[in-house]
Length: 359
Ligand SMILES: Cc1ncc(COP(=O)(O)O)c(C=O)c1O
Image (cartoon, rainbow, N blue to C red; front, top):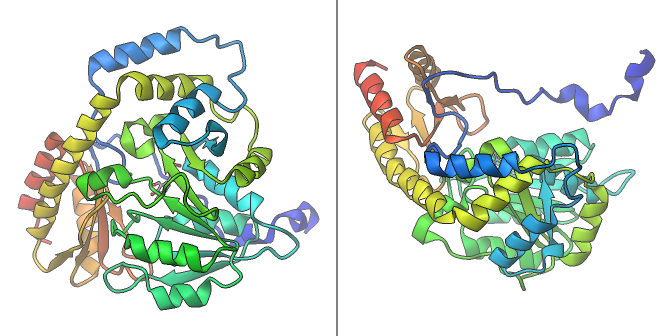
């Protein structure tokens, strides 16, 4: 036994979240924004980095960036908490909300983003999983049955990996009905809603509703920068958990410069990806015996029949330099693949490969 007896019990049941690096020419497996930044923007960002004092610590809490984000969302910057990706924000939230020795549960509809349950398990927070309905919407009565006593509930809207969009009114009903539970509305993919976006979170909304989002899906995955906007008292608690200096000076400088100077370029990149999503949906619809689900994020979920075709498709595309994600082992997603939107060139590659396959 020795030192092993001190390890947190939840760790034994977890796998490391690991994605091997890939140099495949077409990478459609990580839900990134596929569009590259134009060279002029990259040069401007390079100048930002060149101006940094690398021998100095960054700001402890990213004040300048929080001021910009506060103005963007219409809130006091003190309500904005930055994380090293929203992964870290998830961890900070669940740590703050796990009162020992037997913390109240996290509720998540499933399938959803795996890091909610993963992080809860690390922290020995029990997880109540509530299967989504057949169209990947919320099963309201099952959610109502699971929520009493829960400390938190994470709702990704749009959801990953289903790309479905939970109905705004249903989410708000739950938030109102369970005021003792913190609801984290994860809008990582909300930029891809384009004009169908209904603002669900408002600065003066219920105390128990937290907005969480990330720059990872809007062209800046390399920065590792996520944030949440919480009630001032909760934000204070989160900042006690958060490590000081958790965002590097480079990430702070680059995110600040993009928000300040390059948002129009960023919007055009998202628009291009939204247009390409429609093409990606058509390409997948061209596969025989395949159901393509409505896509609201920068990702598309498709179910192949029989289910064994999913793995075969992932393998055959990998051989042709195209990476997509096999979801067929996830409960409720038998036979499913998840394909992130690509650039026009990447989708040409995919179209050509799909044309050659007999799957
Ligand atoms: C719904 C959702 N939230 C959060 C994240 C994590 O984002 P970040 O890169 O900011 O850690 C992801 C990543 O795929 C996601 O799908």
